[in-house]
Image (cartoon, rainbow, N blue to C red; front, side):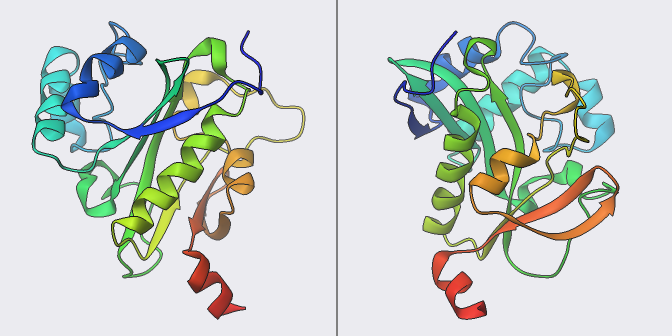
Length: 200
């Protein structure tokens, strides 16, 4: 089991790092042939593309230099992934009950967090969320939204159902709740530091 003292380096996903992404997500593309396309496509298109088609679609996005996300590395190996891009890139969120837009601001969205099993609970997810928000702000985002799963006290999270992350790591990264459209999926938002100061 990895320790929290291990150094985490975060880098944008590029074609040069594509093989690292593939190795991290494994033969099932993290889960059921997803390849992090579930939020990027309408439900029907996503289902039709499960597996190699979704993998090719993701690689095409990376090749086009669309913003897709960040990889976390430890000792030169990819151990985590965070999907981050403008909300407009995520067609799969358009009809989501829990991810309804809060306002008309130019928000980026964190749509997925995936951490290698051996490195879960060691700070990788929090490092990714922090790096993702700074990445978005550096590219002009007005704010960053996320919809992590919120567990009740004593409730054990099932990995399969928390692919948008768990609330505590977003709290640690400075996100605050701005809406709640379903009971267990709050809308959390991060603001650039200058905006946070102005709103106080």
